[in-house]
Each structure stands twice: as C-alpha cells, then as structure tokens.
Amino acid sequence: MTLSDYSGFKLTSALTNSLSVSWQSPSNIALVKYWGKTGRQIPLNPSLSLTLSKALTETRATAYPRETEGSVEPDFWFEGKQNVAFGERIRSFLESITDIFPWLVQVSLKIETHNTFPHSAGIASSASAFSALALCLCSLDAELNGIILNEIEFRQKASYVARLGSGSACRSVFPGFTIWGSARALPGSSNFIAIPANEVHPVFKTLRDTILIVNEKEKPVTSSEGHNRMTGHPYAEARIKQAGKNIAELLDALKNGDKQTFIRIVENEAFTLHALMMTSDDGFMLMNPETVRIINRIQEIRKETGLDICFTLDAGPNVHLLYFEDQIEQVNKLIIEDLLKNNKQNLRIDDLYGNGPLKIG
Ligand code: PMV
Image 1 (cartoon, helix red, strand yellow):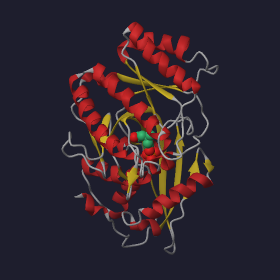
Image 2: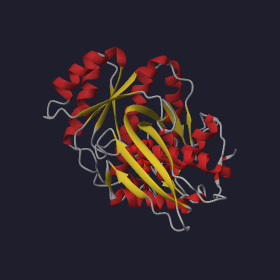
Image 3: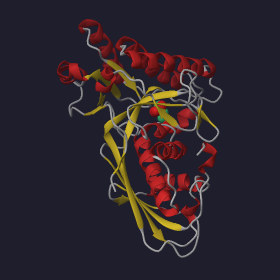
Image 4: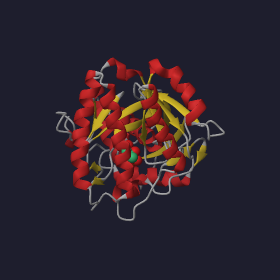
C-alpha cells in the first residue's frame, strides 16, 4: 500500500449491528519542534518527539446502523459528558476525511473519550486525542470493510489520519522517539506520516519527563494560530535549516548515547520555539515569570551539580524537566525543594519513555 492509496470504500451493505473499538494512546513531547504548516497539514520543518507513557487518551468509537446517508454528525462524549466545543472540532475533522473513510456518512458514530491528565495543563492533549481517534477509525475501517493491513501498514495509515487531526498526533502512533517530516538525515522520513527512530542507545530509553505545571489555564494563543504566524515569518527559512541540522545531530546523539549533545539541542529547540512566537508579526509570549525562573534554575543546577537534566517547553508556560532514571532520587529532591517551591499544590505530572498506543477493545 502506498500513501496515495488511503482513499477508502463505502459499505456495500448497510450495517446491521453496532460495532465498537477502543484504543489508548499516549501524548508526546517534541524535542525538535514542529512549528508552522502549509497545505493539508504539511509541516514546514521536520520534528522529533518522545512518545510518553502515562499521559493517555482512551477512546471508544462505536458505529451504529443508520437508515439514510447524511452529513457526519458524531455523538461526542468527553470525560463522561457531551461536549459541544470539542464535538465540533471532531465533526469538522471527520468531515475532512470522508475521502479516506467514505462509510462515515453511512453510520451513526458515537465517540467516548477521556484523558488521564488535565486537558488544559499545557501537555499536548490533541496529540493523544487524535492519535487514539485515528487508531479507532482505522480499526473500524478494517472491520467494516474487511481491510487487512499488517501491523506496520496499519500504524502508518493511523499516523496519516492522525496528522490530519493535529500534526503532532501522527508521532504518538509509534513508541519511543519518532520523526515526522522529510529530514535529509533520515531516509524514509515523510511529511505525511511519522516513522520511529530505530537506532536508540539504551540510556535514552530511561528518559523521564516531569511536567512542572506553572499555569493550568488554557493558552491565550492556540497552536493552530501559532502555526499560522510562521507564514511570512522573517526567520522561517533559517528555522527550517536549523530544524534539519538539529534532527541530524539529535539522531546521532540518540544513537551514541551522547547526553551532552542531547541536552544542548533540546534546550536550543525550546528557546527557538518561543523565540519564533515572540518574533512573529503580532508576537506573543507564552512563558511567564515562573517559567523563566525554573528554566534558569535548571541551567544553574546542571552547572553546579553536573546532573544530566534539561528542560523543554511546549506551546505553553509549563516546563518539561527531562532527566534519566539513574538520577531520579536527586532530581526528585530538587523538584520538591527548589523547582516547585512556589507551587503550593505541588502540581506535577511524572511521565517517561513510552511504548506507544494499545488496543483495549
Ligand atoms: O499538533 P499541533 O498543531 O497541536 O502543534 C504542536 C506544536 C508543538 O507542540 C509546539 C510542537 C510539536 O512538535 O509538538
């Protein structure tokens, strides 16, 4: 199967019984950031992320028989309640992929979803959400139309579909470190699907990510809006070049177990993402004073103690503290006594290298 073969089939006979599938999918944190897109969710630059383990979305999709064909109107439930705002985003996504799943107009679809983490906590809930939904749609497609794909083809198709919902979601379909976007350093990389980075030194499989929650509120500028501001950005060309170079160096570091290069590139990427936001037309800043204090402390403590710690940021104020399993005790002490000292509720999410999505029903 090639990527252009994803246009699908209508059902040849009406569905007689309901059909349910469920998937659990993790979020991911980008280490080389996707920022800016063109066309039908084509990234301006390649990105590389770590699929996490604990920040999960669980989704059940049920197709019911429907008497007459019509527009796609999913019955969408989030955390046990019908949710109109999210439901609308899901509806327009499903409508945009009826070329891939033409049967979407022939069934009634119920989607029930919940997260194991707060959706507005600045961790990429859209990545886990669209990855879980794409996997459900591909499973339903397989059962409804009898399409048999091998495991790799199935995941590739799910990655393709997830990308159309939220770019970063295409990376959550695979375990560990994944790359999305054509990168010269990696033959086989693609703008349409993510691929796993296979050569990874065992030390990087012990990577931990503790998200230090600085602000739980929804972001003032959505990532969609942020991507748009890369169009005509004065530094766009330089950014695309830099991302390619950073991916190449990071892949070498992952292969060789080179923690120092990893730390240098990961922090360079976090600063670059936020610098691009600040220097776009109508610039904006998502860091707040506590974000800056924590970042400064992480860099100072690394110099003072030699701990292999570094930070990255998503499109929000919360700080992802990255470290390795063998230093977990020292880092935990540091989090409690220093990094979260202004955070009375001690809000943190402890996550780690993850093995990818799981079919749960
Ligand atoms: O997938 P989106 O459209 O939510 O964009 C994600 C953008 C960043 O999280 C900032 C970077 C990334 O590569 O995940």
